[in-house]
Amino acid sequence: DVNRAPVLEDIEPITINEGETLKISPKAYDLDNDKLSLGYSGFIDKDTYKSDFGDAGTYYVKVTASDGLLETPKFVKISINHINRAPVFGKMQEIKAREGDNIAVLLDAYDPDGDELTYSVDNPPEGSSLKGNAFFWTPSYALVNKKETKEIDLVFVASDGKAETRQIIKAEIMDKNRAPRIIDATKSALAKAKEPVLMFVKAADDDGDELT
Image 1: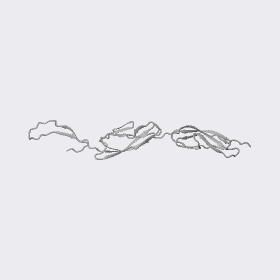
Image 2 (image 1 turned 90 degrees about the vertical axis):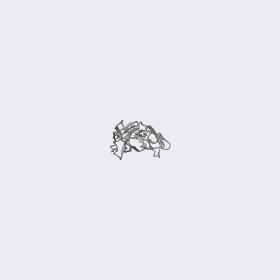
Image 3 (image 1 turned 30 degrees about the horizontal axis):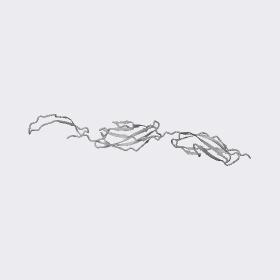
Image 4 (image 1 turned 135 degrees about the vertical axis):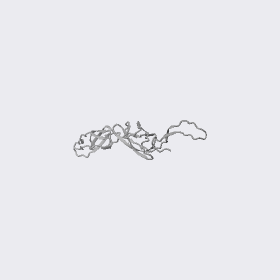
């Protein structure tokens, strides 16, 4: 009686994405009906592998079928595709300011894949600008009604060129009362002792308040 080696069928290449689970399913049988065991070596040493981000690439796994005396090896090609991950915003504080205040916010985001990020604002308010990850805004005095507070949801965007992530920052802007302005007045006057002097003053209030 001559022992015959196990038969191990060719294994088709396997392709998965980062984060998915790899499963190798060899088909083997023994012409002598001997009990077979399967072994794995190379990229992995078992038939299942949960891939992680950063595993992208091409690998080979050696699969061996054994009846205890003879072995039959086959190689399977494993391809793991890179999956782009969206940027992630860090926690950012709400904005609380008054009309006319100079507001500066540094946008805090990172990319899990190490890609370079660019920033934008979906709804940039009047008087705002964005330079890199620095957002600047000086709310106008016409933004908020007198003695009121206005709440605005600012929508910031971080992009790696393939995926975008949005973060909402709440801005609470309060009305700011401005002091009256003297726009014209008597520059000089002649006066006599113990006599009243009449001088002219013209003033304006930018908030439309009545002046006394």
